[in-house]
Amino acid sequence: MKDFYIELDNFIENLDNKKDDYKILSFVVDELGYIPDEVIDYVAKKIDVFSFSLDSTIKFYPKLQKARTKFYVQVCTGRNCNQSGLKEKIAEIKDRVSFIIDERHCLGRCSKGRALKVNEQYYSYKNLDELEKILLNLK
Image: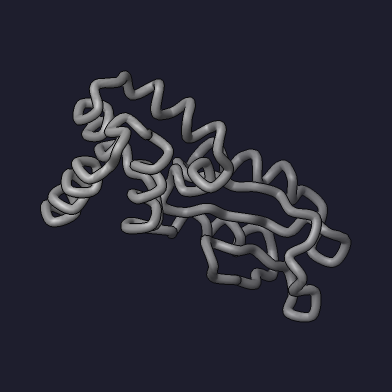
């Protein structure tokens, strides 16, 4: 991670507007794939803004919002994937994890069974217990 901070410092130094939080956060996403809390704190100190200011930028831009956590999960709730208790199970899991879980009407994988997508990786699951196991075991 030390090398990343050197690259980040160099990137910021080469910007015309050294407080361009969108460009800086986009660089972080391009390099790491997500935006860790410690990087938000580092960038805030580096460009002399409050962390909540960066959080506002992240919430405004979908690219950044999806990258706020290491995992961006989409669970299919379409006709072929939906099952009794799915929405309640998703809500329960959301309370137990620190990443984003979005419900999607269709992920286009109907022939492969019930589907979810973690970042760019697709998974199939048979029941709610298996869904829970997959999501709670993400590291």
